[in-house]
Image (cartoon, rainbow, N blue to C red; front, top):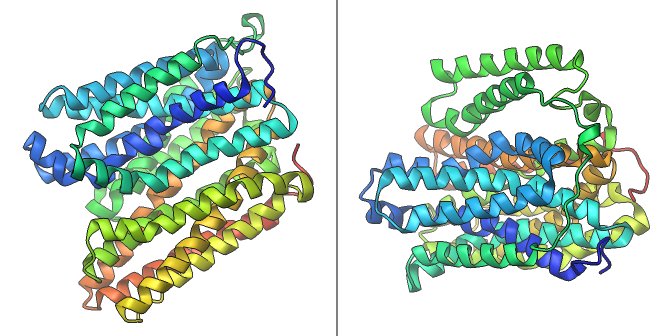
Amino acid sequence: MTVKTNKVSGSKLLTGIVLSILTYWLFAQSFLNIGPKIQTTFDASPDIVNISVSLTSFVTGVFMVVAGNISDKFGKVRMTRIALVLSIIGSLMLIVSGNVVLLLLGRIVQGFSAAIIMPATISIVNDFFEGDDRQKALSFWSIGAFGGTGLSSFFAGAMATFIFWQSIFILSIILSIVALFLLNKLPESRINKAESNPFDYIGLAIFIIMIGSISFVITQGYKIGWLNAITVILFVVFVICIYIFFKVERVKKAPFIDLDLFKNRPYIGAVIANFLLNTGVGVIALFNMYVQGGLKLTAFQAGLLTLPYLISLLLIIRLGEKSIKRFGAKRAMVIGPIFTGLGVLLFSLTFFDTPVYVVIALIGAVFFGGGTGLFATPALSTAVSTTPPEKVGVASGIFKMGSTLGGAFGIAIMTSIFTGIIESGQSVHSAAGIGFIVGTCLVLCGVLTSAIVIPTRKIN
């Protein structure tokens, strides 16, 4: 690959970027599968463990757009290096002590690290690569993100079972140091200070309250109750903040988020479709709950059933990249979620006997992963290439925040449906089947978004 600097080779830069994003998608996300080990090590209550599992994603979702905005103004390479240092610090907090306070602080620090890394590294790709090389680079970015997610559960289970869970974060520290070394000579790319405007701290404060309130509703509402007073109050706060944010930001010369971004049809279509497709994370969570609780498979066996998802995703993701040049991004963004929805629909056939269902689930996982892989690079490319260079950081922050909140929304909706139906007296098989059908509908809404909102044209 060619890259717009003679100080760092394209492959070296991409390796550093992929290792950077793995600190979240592979390592920080591994907490989803090692909760019991964490509880034993820290002698913590289940509530503390649950908080530690979700805390990193919550902090990441809330601060990602903020971090993207800051990266645009103060330097994307600089912010990536800071994020890698934070990842190292967060990992050390998890492994050097059995103190619960350090556990929670470490997860918060990991969340800040991920919030900075994602929009900053996407901006670096956009700045240093051009044309076909940019599409290829974005494919490798997606491989790191989606591939890390697909492997994290299996990887964490294997490391915790055959070595010890702390080894996950020792490896994360090592790879973070390697990433820092690979990005060491990368020159800074940012807007000139003469072109910069005063930072909008009012917009920042309103935005954090707005995203924090809706993130809490999405991630915790199904646990404390959708009609609980706290849930309702925070939803009202979210709505009020939306009104105030748009009212205040419209009249500012240099707003925290340029509202013109939301007039860009390709961009807003990619963001919404990405949000809806990422509700598929809820499908994976529901699938693990069902095959372990309903079919009595072990966690390791459940992880094996999801491996075809990872394999097909990694095989197809480059196909999505190549389709952009020939057909434009829209076609893959429509066809990809159709295959994803078909895979989720196959998961819903829970009325079959276990041996037959396992075969169907393996086929469903192939469709699920392949469709997601076909969608990934065209969606990310659309979001990046249709945005002015000086706004790519905040734009990619919003795009990836859609991924995080979409996943949280999918988990909340499908878990609530699954639990509610079981509590009403129906079987675990019926509950899972209905949950998967709801997941199919959410993914197909992503198909409609791509088909209706995104214009038919090639994205460079």
